[in-house]
Length: 277
Image (cartoon, rainbow, N blue to C red; front, side, top):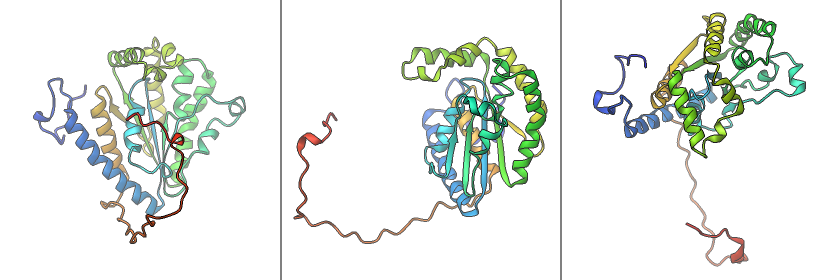
């Protein structure tokens, strides 16, 4: 784990013996940051800003967890998550970036990519789904594509979640043991588990080509999930200008109550869901 910043918000008493933020402290801070995200969302709508946030990293690095915490309190019509599956036969014949372009934001929208066009430089490359020629073409043209987005006034943020080999293995085993989490462990995750070194090499080359001044990579130390979520959300809030005001509270007009003696036909008892709780 990286050294904690001198500018951290909390004192040693707020951490447990393992160096993790205590759960109640984490929950309170997450709630504070989520309120700031709501303010940011309101400003994005008001100003017509367009924002794309890319989340990348190894399997079980915690990308989905931070995306869930970002979207928990936000309007899904304004803040959209895009997690594309395997391309169809038709999509395989398209320009590589084409199926991602259709998901880009309009004015007043934020799009979160849970994995993105960077699949080509990582998963597709390591698992043999793309030829080396296709990979090199991607590495050469990706900065051009992202430069196009930035020139179109689309704000692009890119986060790579870094997790250690031991922590990744611990999380994968936890998914196997918990029936509720097994859906998170795909056959691809199992196959890629033994290719740690290949993924490291692919990631290093990807960063070499695509860490640009106009679209830099930001790396999140993700071995401690709580810290990774807070650090990532806090950084996002620093990157996107917004007014420090929550959405205005609407005025509710005086309610006209229905008469007690209305003549609606009551529903039969058997139409109701059984009250188990």
